[in-house]
Image 1 (tube, rainbow, N blue to C red):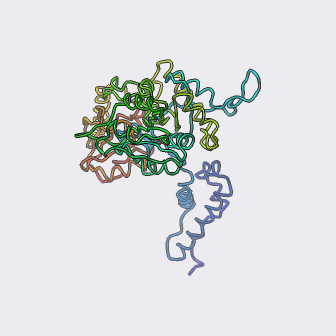
Image 2: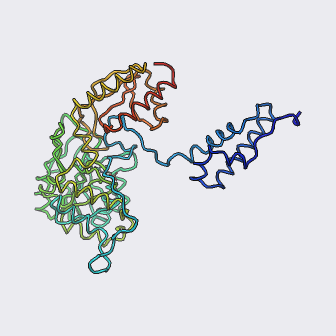
Image 3: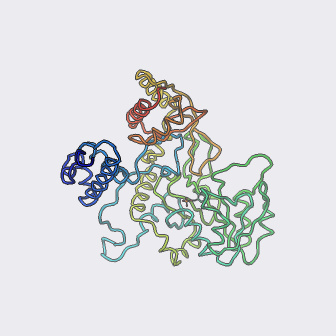
Length: 449
Ligand SMILES: *Cc1c(COP(=O)(O)O)cnc(C)c1O
């Protein structure tokens, strides 16, 4: 008896409902009207099939749900409670937030009004901070290596130890980059041991460089050996072959000041005589995505003229952010970069915050405890080292973790032995309130814990 069905609200009435005000403002009338029509026709089908007729506010809720994924931010901000400071899936290092102006003197000298050098300001800062003769910037470190190989080693040999033929994140595989850049990979030594004489025996008139690659994401222990960088440099100098170092992490300060073991810095590698050091901008440099090359003029100058240079040009907002990050480091103000603020927090302070969060959760009836943890820097930096940290631990891990991920704000925690561990090392203190509210909301709407 279709005639007796209560009727659905008209399109214009749904559109006029204040529950759709924000959707209209953000998405425009056409998109929202289309969603209303689709929702109404689906509701009509469901009603014909015997379902109840939705009310006006129910229709509005259905339209909002249909638009939900469009209304959500494209890249939602999250609370990083993983205990991994440089988390590739969460955008690597948190960086200094410096918005690029709408218009900026990017390629113009304000003194002369003539065309200026786009990379000039960052190159100047890189040279001063790292004390290198020359420097340049491309889109990321993979691109930096690709450009070096293309410019210097096309159809020539590049010698790499078998212990350093790395894969990073599934898509960066050293032997494949070599092939793509047209360089010939000459592997020397064994997985665990490579000696100076192995490099020496591989040098020919066709050798473009010796390439040393940092073991960013693994660690070898036991019967292992590789020549010191200074020995390789001395060998290279005797034979007129440059040594390049793909250092990756961009470690540029003494990690011992954060309770970690000292890692070789870019500055130390340059001081040891490497012709070029390559690294990412968004790992320990705590800046934007970028690939940085510092070194001699002989290594860097030919890159500027290479046709790929233009294809690998960094975006203006990355240049603005990189320059601001380097300015902070040049001024000795490392903790202006969020990464170093997080790394510098004392474990006792994290302990105090974890205890406080756990107590507030328990008061709300949610089982929680403060537990000591080990956090990592991550992102291909210091694979065998951890930082002291504290976390809030809750039972019923897996289901709670899933609810936290879709909460407001989304919280990314880790699961340890079936328990949820929300590590505070990568959580700025001002996010504790949001973290608490998100856990409370996720714990309440799930099975009682
Ligand atoms: C991280 C890393 C890369 C890749 O750097 P991207 O900036 O991600 O392209 C290359 N080499 C090493 C040694 C690394 O650690």
